[in-house]
Image 1 (cartoon, one colour):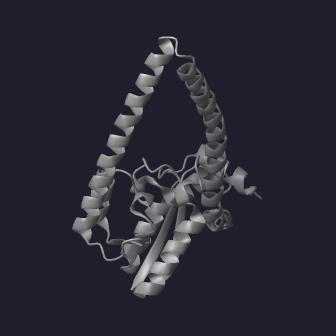
Image 2 (cartoon, rainbow, N blue to C red):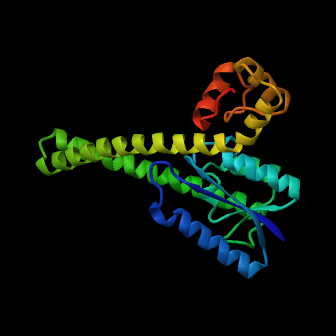
Image 3 (cartoon, rainbow, N blue to C red):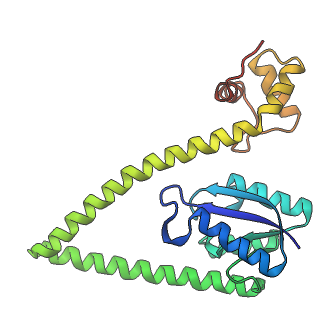
Length: 235
């Protein structure tokens, strides 16, 4: 059976919780060897699990290839596709997929597992918020130990936010660069066909079925940014 491998790492927490790119590839490699799957392509996103799978650039491409080749999508763990049961339910209607850590699970089992995982996350969130409220109440009543814990938590969140913002910027730049490279040949073809202005370039790209990274039609501004990123100029 032909499969398309899809990996997702978080922009801010790559590699944590055993779900780094290397671990995901190993899960899928082992599952493919054990189940006779032929991996025909691999796609990787650096994006939040809260973003719908079909809105992620690489996942959208992976789904398209699965439909084109009539292949199966495979992920290392279910939450690499999404942490939202509605997203999983929607995907089950679009494409067949397998999870390397439970390769024999059918659609019903995958849906059920996603629902149970989402419920457990809600329980954890409630317990965490209750514990934090209790800690804040003790700190407000003069408990110095609780107050110190609150201060450390605040400092840690601020540092994580700073690092997360920097990581998000790097991830966005990396995605933009990767997309631009996929458009290099199209840009050169447009110039070869006689596009000599930004409007002409945008018109050529739109007429030939190309769209921006966000799925919109090209404008002169978008065409200009693409040329600048690829360091391509009008002759």
